[in-house]
Image 1 (cartoon, rainbow, N blue to C red):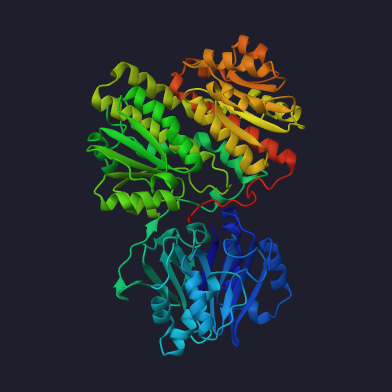
Image 2: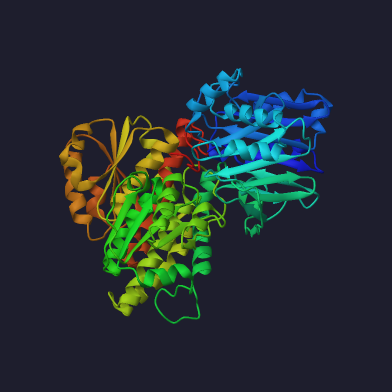
Amino acid sequence: MCGIVGYVGQRKAVDVLIPGLQRLEYRGYDSAGIALQVEKGIEIKKSEGRLENVERLLNGSAESLQKSHTGMGHTRWATHGKPTTQNAHPHKTGHVVLVHNGIIENYLDLKRDILTRGHKPVSETDSELFGYLVLDEMDKGANLAEAVRKSFVGLHGQCSMVVMSEKEPGVIIGVRNGSPLVAAVDPQGGAIIASDAQAAISYTKDIFFLDHGEMVIATNKGLVFEDLKTGKTVKREPVKLDWSVDKMNKGGFPHYMLKEIHEQPVVLVDTLNALLDRNKHTPFPLSDQPAVRLLENARQLIFVACGTSWHAASIGKYWIESLAKIPVSVELASEFRYRDAVLPSGTVVIGVSQSGETADTLAVLRDLKTKKIPTIGICNVRGSSISREADAVFYTSAGPEIGVAATKTFSSQLLVIYLIAGYMAHKSRATSDTTLAKCFEDLVKVPHILSDMLEPDSSMVRQVTGAVDSVKDAKGFFFIGRGTSFPMALEGALKLKEISYDYAEGYAAGELKHGPIAMIDLGMVVVVLAPKDLWRDKTVSNLEEVKARGATILGIGDTEDHDLKTLCDLWVGLPKEGRALEKGLLPFLLSPIVQLLSYHRAVYRGTDVDKPRNLAKSVTVE
């Protein structure tokens, strides 16, 4: 959610904080601010709206601010209080200044207590209240670190804080309780604290990921980690990230989202190379690792996820049940965590999250850990909370994804789940090795087919852009499909809602007659996902019902499917090379098509493609 960057060291703080916050803009925000330590104390510049507003305030500020070597910045995604300058972070209470990510659940009790002490909060936020707690502890004689620790243990909820005080210049305290927080040592001297490693990757690839219930003290000398409850020093080891600054640039594309759509072929190859042992001469040769060993004893899989990750898992359910012949459930983490679910012996739960910090998914894994249920994570960030809380992890190798709408991380999640399906099928002998060998050989071909599909002048790209041009006046969209195309329809509708703000719904094609067909008339566009697979004929029969009601039909199917094509007003054909693939792999080819449809629609509507309104990249609170 919110972006946090804190710095103390030899560099000019502004030169670290502003670029750091810019790298975190993808998380979504509605106000921003920066606090800088100067000789007279700590000065704050903040504003509603974009980070550029804060930069303008800094440009007209005193030279002392520009030369400051200690400070922190924040991009706020509003929870408590409107997105105003008054509610923007940092907040200052006396000599204490702080920024906050997350929610303080017992803020009403805290506010009543603070008011009785004579304090007068000036914002509507829950965040500001914490500053008064720290202020009172320091007035009693505690130093900053001790005051922060004592104050923080009284908070309820998932949140992280970064705190400074005018009484202790050159010291920044970070505390993590749920919401992610990382730290890094500046090679030139000093340290960085941030809510995401991307803010520090320009200076070092060695990143410390704070655990739940940990505090970090940053000074010119580096970092000291402490246990939040006991105050005892904790030994931490950094995680070396293989990300680069180049991967976080647009690379000549107008938007990060478009760049990340085009990165999918490389991402799939990188993920394959990271997970496979090519010395094994078996279908789906996953390298030996703890996650693989947990799968070998599984008699049932339960996937828990949110949003796009839930759609990836929903597609994977078809694969695993078809190939490995074991039962699979796919659960929304936000619902599953509050259910009294029955988990028989042999159940393995797999949490899927691109960031590894998704609050609901993380909560499920933590709860199951106490119940001794084996858990596996699928995520894109080494050192993330899910990677540490799960018993084992499969990492995707998507690299940093800046656009809020997940694209390449979705494809890499699909890849991992397909590998799981094939591996388990081989181990259980549920599917013949001859069939599995064909599945794996075709899987390896997918990145090359995608690469050709995504060429700027490819027929697919021309057909997608032409279709978008033809439906400029559409009043809404329905995405329909059956089988693995049903979750892909849900994903296509989600993408369109996320970045173009169009009315869009995804449905199983067979469910249209059970109510939704009442919405279909002139002005609606129905996107039909109907590749030549097991469900194609049934989908086409549902399409006849739609056509009779006057909707514009955009078909996506086999390039030689002339019968389907004649039913459609607009058409996007899958590449000829895809005809020979195992039918289970078709979602990999449908994915970039629905992504590009959403992207070009959003560009036409003039929305902020990479930073859509009201959304955050990593949902770290409920």
